[in-house]
Every structure is written in C-alpha cells, then in structure tokens.
Length: 292
Ligand code: GRG
Image (cartoon, rainbow, N blue to C red; front, top):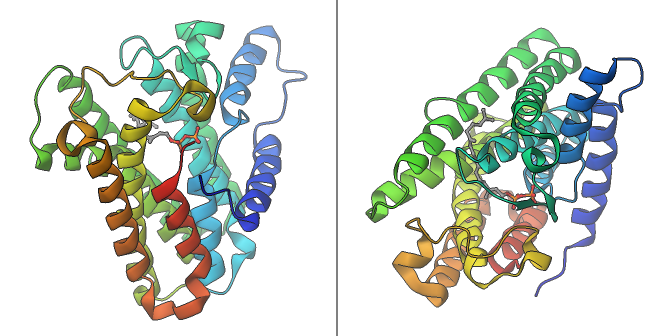
C-alpha cells in the first residue's frame, strides 16, 4: 500500500489542532451540555484521514494563498463528522464501528448522538460566520449548504436509504454517490479556491478534479467494505451486503480499475496548473490505492 505523503500527515496534524480549538472541551456548560460536547468531540477528533480538509488546503495553496483556508477546512470536517453520526444511526446504516471506535449512539445513546450531529452542523456554519468577512462567509456558507442539501448529502442519503435491498442501475448508483460523497469533495476544492481568490478557471479545474476524486473515493470505500479489515478501515467489514455497490457492478478488480481511471481523469483536469498541482496528483494516487 502507498503510504501517506509527508504533506498529507503534516496537514492532518494542523487540521486536528484546529478542530480541537473549534469545539473546545466542556468546562462550564453543565452536565447535560457536556455530554453533547463530549459526543461531538468523540467523533470530530477521532482518528480520520481528514481528506476533505486536506483538499481545501491544497486547493487554496494551488491558487497561491493558503493562509485563509483553515476555518472552512474545519467547517467541512465538522459537516462530514455530523453526517457520519447520522449515517451510523440504527434508523440509517446501523453501524457498530466508526473511526476504529464504537459509534457515537452506541456510547452516548441515540438522543445525544442526534444532538451531537446537529451541534456539529451548527458549529460548522458558526465557524464560517465568525472566521470570514461577510461576503466570503456568505459564499462559503451557501456553498456548504448546497453540498449538504437537496442536491447533496441529504438527497443522496435519502435515495440510498430507500434503495436498501433494491437492485440499482449504474446511473442511479452514480447519482447517489455523487450526492452522498462527491459533492463534499467538490465543495472542499471550491472553498479552498474561493478563500485564495482563485479565478473562475481555477475553480472550474479544481471542481472537475474533485468531482472525479470524490467518486473514486466512494468506489474505493465500496471496495474496502469487501476486502478491507476493521483494523485498516476502522469500520465493520461487509456492512454494505444489502446494497448495490460499485463492487456489485464491476467486481473487486473492476472497481479498483474504475477508481484508478477516475483518479487519472481527476489529475488530468489539473493539467493547466502544471507541476504546481503535483500534490493534488499525489493525493489522487493515494485515493486510488488506499486501504484505509
Ligand atoms: C445533515 C450533514 C447532514 C447529513 C445528512 C446522513 C447523511 C445526510 C449523509 C451521509 C453521507 C455519508 C456518511 C457518506 C459516506 C461518505 C464516506 C465515503 C465516508 C467515509 O469517509 P472517510 O473514509 O472517513 O473520509 P474518515 O473517518 O477518514 O473521515
């Protein structure tokens, strides 16, 4: 397996420190609020690849001004963490394990898990409002709301939940995962470019990159459900057995090849940047080959 490039692990550390500050440990909020904050931090600070936040930082770096990217990188990680809590609930995927730990609802109960998910979503938007000047905060908030909303995570999850036990065609499967997974990658790349004052052409190239990267990421997620171990993925193995996945369509080898193809297409979209996009190219290579 390809190991993580050094810039990736350095960014992960920077992001983890910023997330710790974004939702500080409870001190004076009282016992009930403390439980919710503990549950939020339990998910937000758990071991994670933080790949969406890394995309934000690399996109901003590529556009020449990385210094303002960290708050929106954290907001996107908080949105992602919120979606994981919801996705794992008994009424959705009913997952026992996430990020190598028992899922939030199994530790804190369903009511606190739901509140922690809303809490993280709320903190994400609050962080944007407080970290940027009004015009940029408005653009980033709108971008994130679009990614979460009715052509994004919520819509993708709804279609996915309703399709359990159904046989899907490839077009439907692709639409579900573009919304559930792909749009947050696209939002991450766009957000990074916006904080750096990237041009419309920069944003278009980065969005094309992220769209293909996000889908590749999901194809490998499906693959790892079949061939990965809980030690590698931090999740229960073969949890998607009742769903149509990219592996049901293409088999194990076909899914890995599809992921490589999507990552090659992603990297090609960055050709106008030349060597400056090398790190995003390395990130795509990592995604195609990942086992975690
Ligand atoms: C209101 C935020 C919100 C969401 C509601 C529940 C829901 C709609 C959407 C679920 C979206 C979801 C969980 C998609 C799966 C995406 C995916 C591949 C997750 C695994 O991501 P990794 O591997 O995880 O990056 P780590 O733990 O490394 O961060």
